[in-house]
Length: 137
Image (cartoon, rainbow, N blue to C red):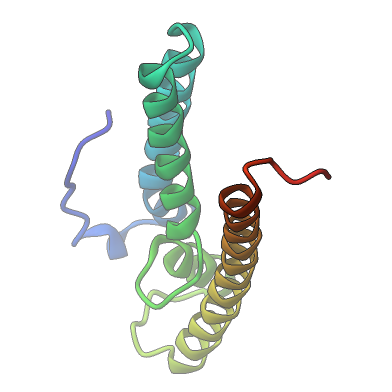
């Protein structure tokens, strides 16, 4: 059952598989919510309501994916940690450093792609404002 907050402070007592399920549950429920928003947007008539639901779905799904990045203490970090370690010992410093480095690398790639997209959009808008015509592609 999706909820806004769940107390998982006792989850260290569970098996590795159960801990992975708990860590993935938030992203899974957020993904389901994003799909529902997308379907509402598709079923609504074309217009601002449909566009708003589509944008909300995109943001919700993007945040669910962002949570899976293996930053320290994110859902992705806990999933990766439980997959790679036998113990729930919080002192696994090397794994924390590795997952944070992987998360930073993935975030850098996402930001780079986003900046390239914004740059292309700005170029198209500048051309449209200057000439009054959309650029040919």
